[in-house]
Image (tube, rainbow, N blue to C red):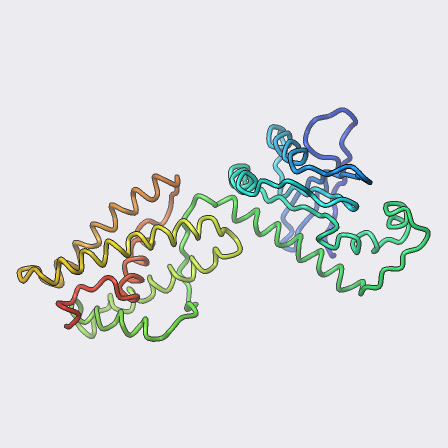
Length: 300
């Protein structure tokens, strides 16, 4: 796979550190990574998730700093997985967990070494038909994905919205809608106009990027955004029936309301980082999606 292996360590018999083998290696960026592997060679007995979970607890209580934890079981699939507990513990421990079991086609991994395959599966020959290079690439992709998840988990409680030139995949009308609403509070040549569009785009790119890397955080953000959307709709209706309330005042007042909601959101989920980028991004996203409108009755 092209990784430089620095050390392979087998756990001493009787030790309770939550793994059988650890592999220390350099990733593609020459950063040290260490995978901890718990091996389960069950031929007939059921492999219960609770047994693997206990190993995770032991590893967390040790002095090790895992990049990933892998439960390797060539013959038996895992049973009775509590996905809710596993998800919460993974976030708390800040390293990904993967189960390499028959349902993940792990037999092909062993078939990369014929002698090992015959010993593990108690067969005289290795008759699996597969492309060797494709399998190596598949396993490497899994390893790299675990490394990426580790990096994400390190910052699972941090909102970090990067300045980027990327644009979200979306209906172009959303940009037009936001621009029309900005007309009521900004002049055509106001430098803030482009900046506001960029802040919204950066926010959306950030949220979209969480789909695979941190779906839990993404779900929390979208649920919170949905609740704020209801508030935006209610306050917009109030704004439209108050003849003394100007678009500019409502524009700034809603930022204050949204800021209060963000502070509560951060506190509830123990988040930190980039509050202002997050605030601007979500406000302009709500405006682009229509519930938030600081124009009188939807007109400039």
